[in-house]
Image (tube, rainbow, N blue to C red; front, side):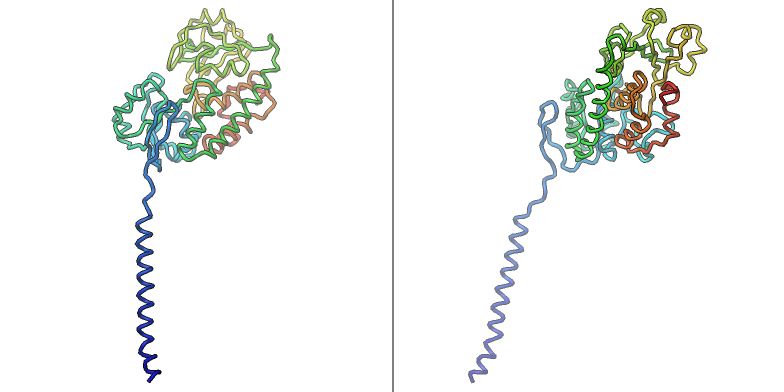
Length: 361
């Protein structure tokens, strides 16, 4: 009889245990669901003008109100750039092919007036804005799209903070530090060259802009900062023109300045200067000391006056004072880091044609 009772009792005991386990599992599952909250979709940051801005955690589409800011995004996170401020130069441009399809949307820089409807139609997650005094007005017009203030500075050394800020903002901090390391190395080297130039050893330079070469910028312009930094003396004693720059001068002024070297902007008259009636009479032209500023993917010393000037830093160090580095090697490394482009020797030779003394190629 005892054996029969035991057999009957076992299922009951087993059922009780099963019920308890099931209840416990259910309670655990319920507890897990209750305590797991969805990850936040936004975060609040302080931009470079001290404004608190709520932005998406996941940023995939970025536009910029200025050309410099757009260029910085391209160099740090090109897949996130939804539109260019200005087209890439070159045919084809010196950038990976997939980025040549990025639409040109304009900006509020360099004399341009951007189109709000065009920006809105591209549905950016954020818009970068370097125009501190206009940010509130831009924010009102862009509605709910967050405007992030970005202070890109106006001197070569001031780009380091903005590169780090954007690297963090766009999830590209490692890339930002790579760019900074390259830049600091180039700056240090050129500084070491210019520090050794005697007071009477600095060459004088005229920067010829415009289709006739009769526009230029003074020493304190964004567009010619690099000439002075690299040890040149900018001869242009003209009034600073804000924004896009380019003050008008006369041939008589250029003859009076009598520069050692003349640099022609990419869209100026370098190719036809020898057939001009007056230009060949200038000492620099007669002596063959005139050169074309390279321009891939942008002008190497200006337009926009941004990180493209790192290339100009290397180029002018070689052109003005025959720096000992191999310019092709340094230029190829720049394109790899800043544009993701593999620059071959043949393309470099075409890019630098007319830009260097033959013995310095």
